[in-house]
Amino acid sequence: MTKFARIAPRFAILAGLGAMTAACGSGGLLNRDRPDEFAVQRQAPLVVPPDFNLVPPQPGAPRPAEGSAAQQSLEALFGGPQARSTVETNVLERAGTALPGIRSAVGDPETATVAKGTVTRDIIAAPEGDGASAAAVIPG
Image (cartoon, rainbow, N blue to C red; front, side, top):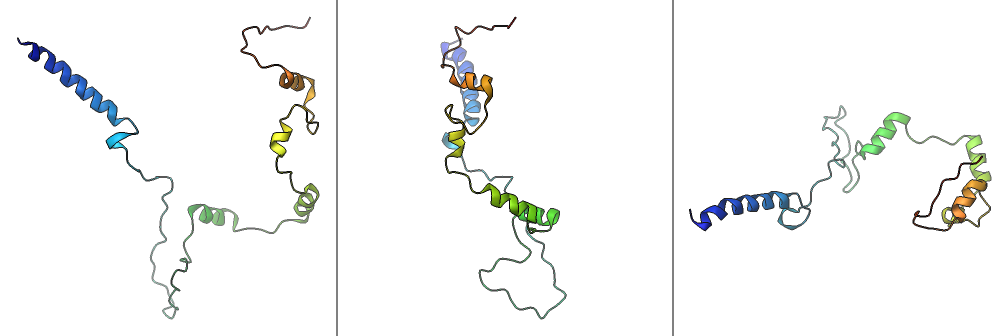
């Protein structure tokens, strides 16, 4: 048996495994744009209207029975937008608008706008470390 006859099957197996592994990758020849299966929606069915004296639609105008799936489901569940109650309107007026950087200011250890409590304040104020010198203390 020649040296090539012994190496050829191993080389073929390695090449096949390499090709199968390359098929799992996201780059190279096998990379292509795939459709988003969650963005697909059904088109409104074509029906013959009972009134044949309808005016033709304007060019570029949206179809009346069409809309996104989210809009159609909200319309089916809740019947469209509703007017706000007086209680909700009063609460929103009293709340006012939030400051632009409020989320980062609330997480700041020096801020006094949120009652963090002593334990949370101690955790936030603790120096950052790798945990190698950490110890658990059980109060007596």
